[in-house]
Length: 242
Image (tube, rainbow, N blue to C red; front, side):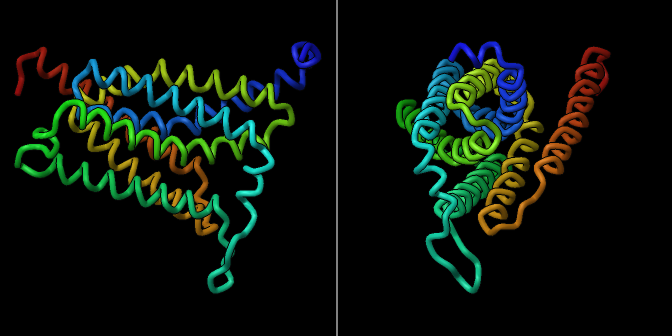
């Protein structure tokens, strides 16, 4: 352990892997921000804490079973010349879940009727939010940890990078969730991002990799446009213009 603290290579690996984990965690933060926006703020804060704590636990558990995890990339069956591993099946299932969930939320936002779930008890809504967070945490954790295994050699570095990334995700999730809740148009934009991310996960499962740089550029560009939109609306409101 001490030799890692004095090794420049170890620090470089930690910095690189932490940066990658933060970038890969953007999807998780977006999903978390959207899903908790339907429950009251005190419960939303608890849901974020539980969700990100579970994300951290899943990542550390997966890191502790590296041999089994690497085996997830081995083919388990083939269909018309395409090999599918457990990792592929999890990515496809998670992507379809994201697409279905985002489409359902978009429909609920567009529908003029009362939002679904208002008749449910607060406890039931909170439980359902946690269940969805757990499902998507498993999907994102798998992709994140497979990346970590390919990037670093030492388990200590991988765990340190994951812990740092999850702390940054937790710090950023609160402001992002509040911003999404306060601005309905940004919520619609975030839901569109989830559809895009779901499509990318399904494509990965079918061995068609969409470079994440394209997706993150589209997200950053759209978010910048929406930020200036919100800023313009705020300035018009201050000036007393419609």
